[in-house]
Image (cartoon, rainbow, N blue to C red; front, side, top):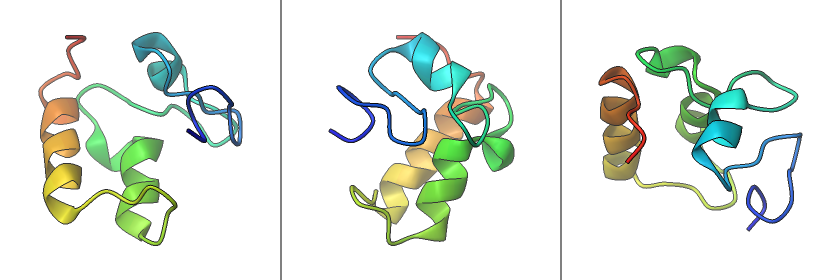
Length: 71
């Protein structure tokens, strides 16, 4: 809810394009570059409201490394 209807730190995950665009801290998703994608950085740091499990983070990273196709 924090990055959907509202944009906390300028990041909205409501649409694919908004997720790629990112927010105040840079691009949310950089296709092919999971390590520099803010979504991954924040989740890997831990203790984030809405924290993903390690398995979910691995899935997000694999998707990003595969080019983050919109589907």
